[in-house]
Image 1: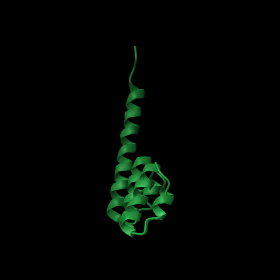
Image 2: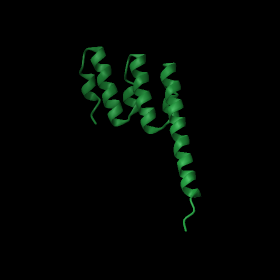
Image 3: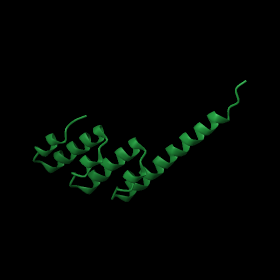
Image 4: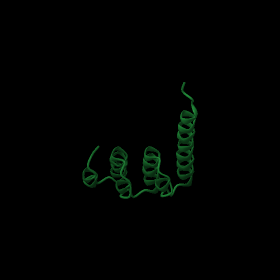
Length: 95
């Protein structure tokens, strides 16, 4: 976890974006991702948080199409797995 204000002090844009990615992912905060200038880095930040939170609306914020598709697919697969697991648990008959 960290405070994104430390990233603001970095002058080199590449390192600044990396800082925002790390802090955004650590805090699972897409508002930090919003501060990233470069599209690929911003997409990656949204991707990691979308997966961590299992949140399709975050996946849909991704500009980079391959990250967006993978994020949506993985979130839907994970939700399906958990739904099936829960249904199977409730179908078990205990004596």
